[in-house]
Image 1 (cartoon, rainbow, N blue to C red):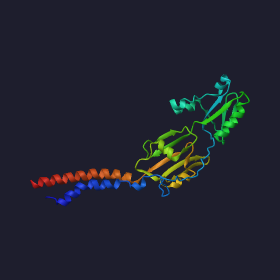
Image 2: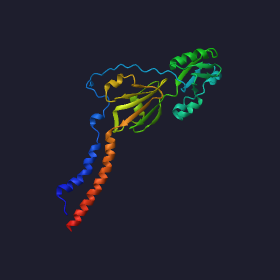
Image 3: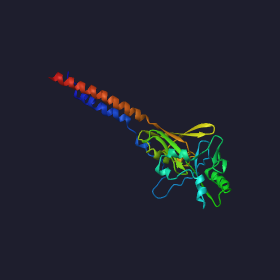
Image 4: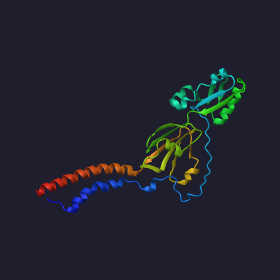
Length: 261
């Protein structure tokens, strides 16, 4: 039996037609879509950075600078060069960990309560304590345990350390190599830990209002999860269907060819 020419063409085009179902619309890809943006006048958006208060489990770098090097070394357990040259995990071994009571144990000074304080407030508190033992000292406090986790439809999912006082949602996604074309930019989950448990909020990366959102700035231990678009499943199913249709088409064409002879 010889198949009609139109039917043979349809069988050959079926894999291509099924593959089109896995395409992503261009409208779903750009971030911060808005009509107010232009090439002449910048659009200003006010958004105060979220203040993070020290919690149990945090790790602090505390460095003391003074004219008495021997006393400095008593406090300075962290080599700041390790931040850039070594494994960030090693900093947990030498930094000052905040215990469940919200305190740290500083050599010579003793136990100091830091839970609930901003990093700047903790620095002032420790400055006052160190001044009792070291003359003309300068105390510097940094948060070592500022890390975010990015999962889902990104190019490099994982946990990332932030060596900065702040980090935005866009910076956090940038650390993970940005979203793939199948990442749902309108439904990104932000999971944040609080004293009451976990909070989950949905972020729309295509909405310019994100810049003014209180969740635009990430806090330590935040996690971002990028959901996949339905097109991803469609693309996977289309690939499988394409293989099936290609096999059927080939078989039918071969049988049709043998019938001719």
